[in-house]
Length: 133
Image (cartoon, rainbow, N blue to C red; front, side, top):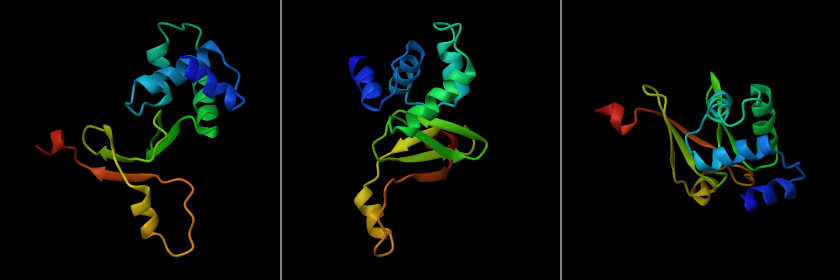
């Protein structure tokens, strides 16, 4: 928990119970949730937590590079506590998003000469193993 507090402080974000709760929940639950899912998960512990606060928090965390916004589905914005480079697979049947490893150097090698990548988001859509059977 101290590391999370330090992360917030280093980014210039004020440490609040609610902000810390959202950040901690994302670190412990790698399920690529929507803001609504986070809000519902935290509501029993923080009954005064508003959905607006959750949206403001995830936007601030993403803006400071502490979490990632996953835009694999146009209908909803999801969030990921893992900021290391990796890909996301979105199953079109069950809707689950699964991480998979990528090598940023492989992606960099595919870019036109002279291009300098600053962030790599790889999205793949299809059927997960469970739905494919």
